[in-house]
Length: 262
Length: 303
Image 1 (spheres, rainbow over the protein chains, first blue to last red):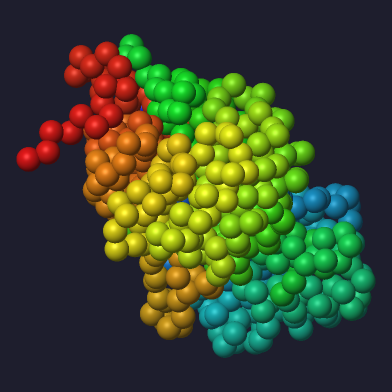
Image 2: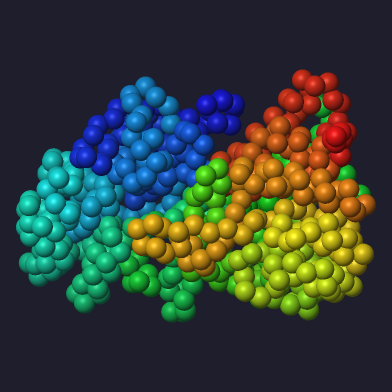
């Protein structure tokens, strides 16, 4: 890639790459200036080499301010993420970060339930590390081969509940069953969720029923990543209850679940 | 250091690189990256008579060397623009092109009349948005409609009026001549080409609007061709755009006949793109011993 002084500003070094499953990869990026500012729930926007027009938005899975690194975990979905997965330690990556509006953190000693579905699980990890033993992490995956990050959640001190769609690991079925059990066992101060829309919708519905604040991290096809091009629109309710479009990259990716029109 | 300044409709631009309407909002998001005064100008987000919420998502799709978008003119309306955004933009020490659109010629004229009372430097009339049902491209694809809306806006303002043309026509030179005859002061082209992508798995178009505007480096040769044709057909200055990604692209479009260039998709990819393009253009001029960017305009030597 041709390097000029502007591209240099966005160029960072990959410290390590690790394959987690057939499709999921973990990348640690050396970026002290970004790590210093990054908040749980924010994302990075990566431009793969090879003539791609758009960046790939990926949620932040780890923030190490001392080491000056960020960790991201992503799935190979197409040609662009395949190129990203081919990067190795020492390679460079063009990254715009940190971007977006992250989670509003609760009191550290408050009970929180974190719900992650599939490749929506990674942004839950910084929250689990923040809340430690006060966090219950409920993760759902297609099957045992897709399971990621369970050791990391356990290392954070969180209680982990694993579900798979086919019962090949952990509990059989959807995350909403253990979610309701945990709510009934002890009402949490906050529920945070990231994953497929049906999972988020069901989580938001339970949070509403039990009157628990709920924050969800959304995904949409994205352009600039900084709120100017207006392509990553999502429908929400404004303070008067009127429908509006907000933008996942700037107003989100984390939204108050009760504002979102599913 | 080459002289990058250019003049269009008597307005001095410090360099010929202008963020295109739609990718740059009203500039605020980019101020966290650099001082907007470094830009030649800013073409602001297309603004209509009243607030528009835009189209249902998904609004963007990637293509080979390009992208499709169907934002649908989401904007807060002209009154909110003039009250909340324009004062800040006018304080940025760069040329502000207020991009306007409307469902009817009357709406466009009303928006232009409101801008006429402000200090905005130029009005860019969008008769070519492919992403709205009424107005938009419907104005830009027939000579009669293009002439009618230009005439209405011309009556409403004494500001320099630049009309932004659609490439989705049989003969862009005929539209350009029709618009020139009704008093346009400049032309900008090309808006996006109408395109479509389909998700093979769901058999759904990727864009919720089914079709959208195709932009990016893939359309650059179309832009060069149309700028060249239009610049030869009219006596108005032309602002060229369409897939400009580098300083050399800017130089090429200027040789084809553009007095300045707008940059869209490159900014979606990289917020620093306009600054990089300005530097690259300067370096290219210096290394080719060309003293002034303005010398490039129309300097192509056709076979």
